[in-house]
Image (tube, rainbow, N blue to C red; front, side, top):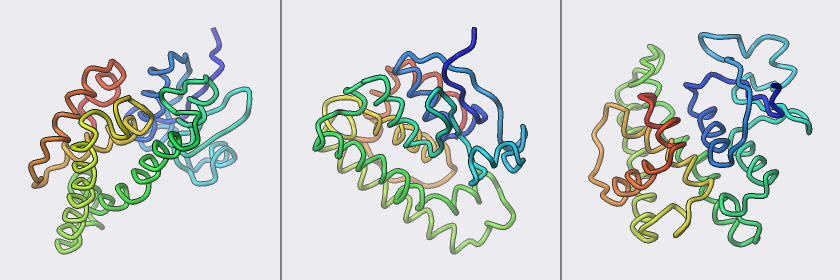
Length: 210
């Protein structure tokens, strides 16, 4: 049976896992193809025609081609009319998108150098001062999240699970799996335990991958 949705990207990619978890929450069937490091090259002409940034994930459905993981998650929730994951009310939706954008910009930007050095062990990312600076910045961003979760005492935006929890849940997992010193953030710990009650989290986050 041919699925209406095709996802291009290896399942170990944190950004691909955002989309896979979203699909699980929505009950969407899909076909996934391995692309990226160790698999088909994203720098091939075939892939670059789909995404000139040479990055996964990319999705293809009856509407065409789409890239950028957080945008894909929003698109799928909207397409399948799931107002719990992505509210239709403009103010409520903006709160979800605010934290999704924060994850993609501020939070991701904070860990980039340190994660590449400590987990990927890239020899070009081994400056001790830059690693230390990156770890401080990463923990500072996580302190912002700790404060938010201590306030909501539930999920990132409030009482209900949304797309913001998918993208930030994966980011927390990356933070926890990186060999580094971390402050004691009890609200984040409790939040992570709440996420662990969801099948999509167990499948796509608790899989031993950062």
